[in-house]
Length: 319
Image 1: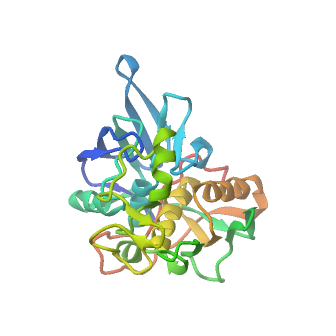
Image 2: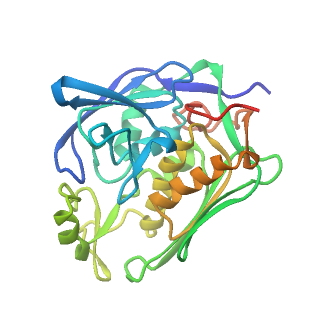
Image 3: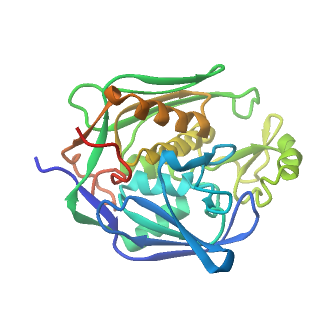
């Protein structure tokens, strides 16, 4: 079989009217097509004196993982809350995209990846004349922090996909202990993960605002929890929306590997820090992975006309 080909957007698409969940400020986002092997790149505009800065969406560029994932190369040259957008690009199989953002955060929209999926669908996806590279996991890599862990491990022989096994455990009865296992494809991403919203506890709001976070958070872009009850009048979109959102975050964070992974990801009580840490551990061990070309998966009856993936930006040398 021929190898899978890289992809990009068919046209430019603009998202305006959103705000940053932490800054509370309006943000304009533009998704642009990009050439093969560009990868996912952010163009941070709105800097002093009309300046701008290109920042690759890569694990090596992560500067902060508290509450969201932030990439950059300096205090001003940063873009935060990238995980939902990058998850949508990764989940639908967009390898190459130039993301223009005129503020320090990607807009939170409704707290999920749904608006980004709709934006991608509005212009469509096209193949490029270049093969897609994958990172194949060869042995287990694990990081731990207290009771939490995240790990990457090989998938069963002959399988060229990516599976997530995510478990969370909160004291609040509104969440409790939830686990979900999912084989990631464009169809499963749309159906199972894209609409899962971020969530937070009312008891933490004052502390977060004092620290300069959550200034734009509301029940319109987050699931609010007060002790053991959900505050949103509409309730939850899924009975296990909380673990689905953690899985959505993991898709976005793991896309920072620079290419789609072939293997399994498992976590217990993980988060952005653990997701990025397991990528750092993977790339620290050259025997734990190999760069490969892989045949495309069978076509699915979905609008994205290709397999999943993110193109090879900033990859280690291919063996």
